[in-house]
Image (cartoon, rainbow, N blue to C red; front, side, top):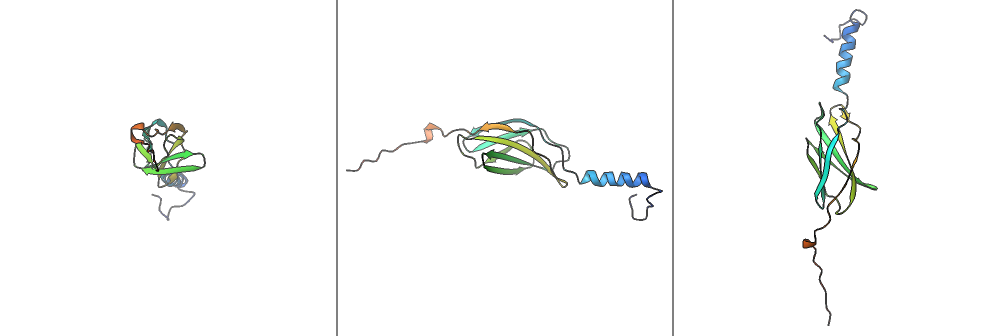
Amino acid sequence: MCGAKSKPLAFAGVLLGCLEMIFSANTAPDIPVIDQAYSKLSNSITVEWRAVPGATNYMLTAQDGDSFVETIVKNSPGTVTGLKPGTLYRITVRSINSGGKSQPSPFRKVKTGGLSKSYVKFWNVIIT
């Protein structure tokens, strides 16, 4: 239907339809919406979002000032690991497909859990 033998004037509607199909197949997916983001551990944040039609992967980004960590996941929920304890992060999600990446979702601020006191032990060194 969209072959090379079609005549532009005679098949203008068909050509426009073909261009529209090609364009939509190579367009980045819509922007995801974060439902919730939370931290149960001191080094990670888990994010839940609504699925985006046509997305094949999602990029989670946790930003703390000038540094950031990105993680690619297949679906919700996803977890960003390797974070600093007791630190406030801005979390965003981007949907990905063969057409590219969406713009980032509106961010959510989440603080990673602090180190549990049960895991911190102080030692007094006595030198005689």
